Length: 130
Image 1 (cartoon, rainbow, N blue to C red):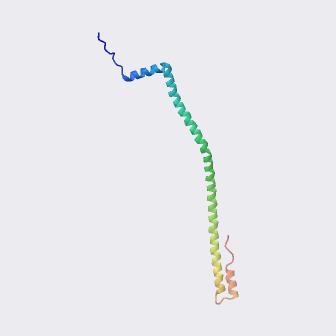
Image 2 (image 1 turned 60 degrees about the horizontal axis):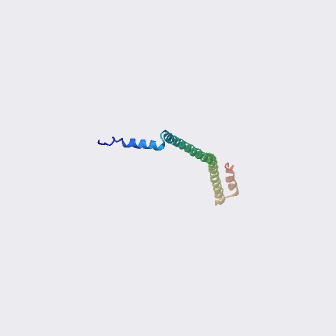
């Protein structure tokens, strides 16, 4: 009688059967399935925790950004008002300077008389609006 070796099973099948035997058959498979399922839940829980932490940190920053934007808007409006006032004051200074130069010329003229100086001053009836 010649003893021939039994036909060989594929290698992957031998590995699967060995793993099933080691893990205790159905109980081991259930444990592996539970770990695989729990792994997805752990990832979801970790993502939720990270999202909550990020929102907790971001909310105060959002509030501060909104506050700073309101302050910036108010500052821009105030700056526009101040620029307008500065332009008005510059115009008033130019007008007063022209008036003063006119009066100086009247006073310093070689043929200046009190009557002419008074007439020149009277011509400039009112100061510019400030």
